[in-house]
Length: 330
Ligand code: BDR
Ligand code: CA
Image 1: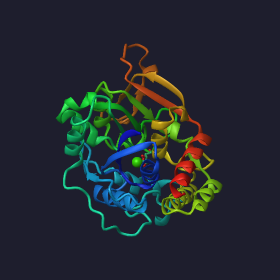
Image 2: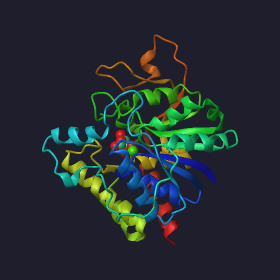
Image 3: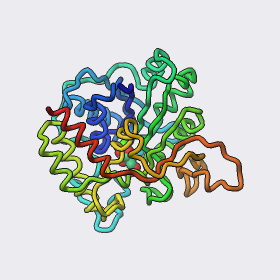
């Protein structure tokens, strides 16, 4: 089984990614780190614990991570709150994509005492070289912090499969995909680390869409995690309709973060993958947080540093998610 660590800002699509990571019998989830992003870190942590309980995996430990980005004082969840009402038609509170509390009962499970960064370093240092895959699907602050604090962790990481970046897809800010916008410096540190990175970009995840019929199929499975996933997909469908199709797909609700988990096991779910150079714009102008690909640097020699996915096989993605939930329910 593939050993992974998830790093999440749960979040609605994060919750679906977590369910899949906890329930797939091909993955060994070593622990979950949390970060402030879609909502504040106290809420991403609490939401994550609720998902752990919902999946019946109380042994999965949750480590609270960074509340704020490395180099700025911006509060990422502010974007989710401010940006959306400006869209035509506005939005009512109920259809906000991410809410402080997932539709799950409060849990008695508690987060660990250790912080995410310290636990990441300890766990990676104790591992064999190339043993552990990191799957960050929120702002990548915790991993950048750990890399800076103790670079001896680098060879221990088999690869990083992250959700973040955009090139062709209209992102939520002028130029940056949300996870990168929420901590651009952190992603640049990770991209320069020399570790193998696969970027499951917004371009790719815009194809990881589920529609009403697929949500109903998940619902039919009937287990608690399948019901949660169905409810969250339906919620995202409602939200994207209210925001004039915020995901820009017209065909369903994008379940961004779950595609990264799928890609760990089934890299072929990512299509149009290019080995390229990717750098984050760190100038504090309009393009702050934009992920700039090699092709835009034709006049310079930029070292290739990541596999950038631009598209995805939506049928394979759904079949995988459905299969994981159904098998775990038997
Ligand atoms: C990313 O931003 C968050 O809102 C989602 O959870 C996902 O990780 C998509 O841009
Ligand atoms: Ca996320």
